Image (tube, rainbow, N blue to C red; front, side, top):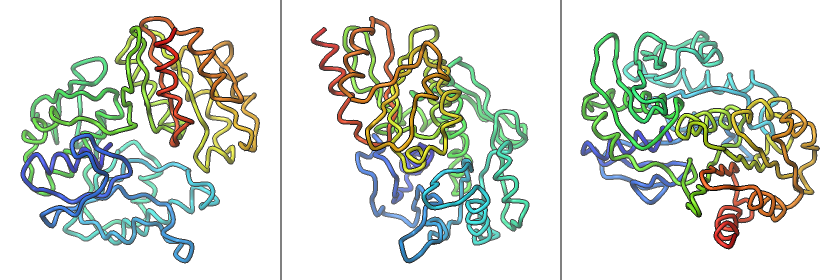
Length: 337
């Protein structure tokens, strides 16, 4: 989302950037292009480069401006522990030039640890409570918010996205855009034209007043923030969450203890237990109490949800895979009901 936002802010202000994004921004309709200017936005992460190069991909990009959005343990198939990931982030930080800029959240202790290990690049911090870039919601779901930097107010943004995490994403993108010469006021105006990203809280359809969403969330923190954003948007309406544990880290059971807490904002949770998962989701279901459901087939999930769904419900499907086309199948079954 943050990469798509930054690419759009550059595009809407005449800088025609190239970009490489692990999703499809609705403003562009493609996930990558060369661009017409020297500006290029890359969604970079710490995953290894190739089987013969175990350095993280992002060290090859040599950024001038870097948004360090968060740092948590992930990619358990590549890294043995959090410290191994921090080392790669440290390598990234040390290749960003002195005339560059790092944009980071003040409250992320893992990133703070990395920056303390050595950083010669200016750092601008973003967080609702931190010094530096600040965002103040003027609507409960964060679809409107005021932006200020070092005590100076720049105005209010109004856009279609929701949730505090997206508000922070926007704040980071605004800071990075400012570093390449885009006035903050221009960036705020451009946010109104941002259309979102496919598979990031994408509304797949509405049937009988029941809304079905598709979201790429597959890490406990992402699950929690996505659900929180939807809760802020829909209020007391019922949220039905559906989760496929598909990422390599999820399939290894690394997040087994934090899954149930991350799903608590939903009113009902359906967990998919494929035959080849390798660990039992029963404990996660137990941690969810009466709201937890466990199914071995996608069809049984569809059948149970269709039987239980009522007008006004919001069905949030979370997976970083195709999930056997569950979104379209749900919409068809709901329409038939």
